[in-house]
Image 1: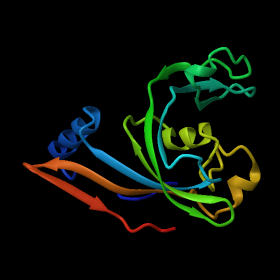
Image 2 (image 1 turned 90 degrees about the vertical axis):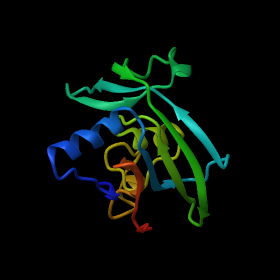
Image 3 (image 1 turned 120 degrees about the vertical axis):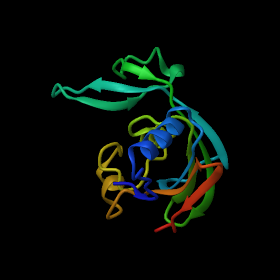
Length: 167
């Protein structure tokens, strides 16, 4: 669903070297997203553990649960929660109550950016999995999340790959 930069290791050695950088968090990843609403602040950090919750149908779904809401019984307990941190910066406030934000995940959890924007009260447009209502889920023809920039080290150099933003 996410568009933008993709990195492939063409050999086993390249794949191993790049994977190690992701594990050690020495890469730098930047995403752009269109979100519902206008955040009050121009930047911030979302520090919200991510795990899975069991749905009423018996499936497991990724979820985010703020530690400040640990007494909230309406949110089921997370299964195997793991730390997840995302830094964000407002790039544009657009008409129709839409904003363009830059997202920099410090961890790499499943659905992290989607869940953190939802936890902020500003879900990503076109997110059919985590949007709080059908209007946000269907207001765009696709998920408005774009891998804009990726930085990795390769043979003593910092390699930067960027992709033109689609929105």
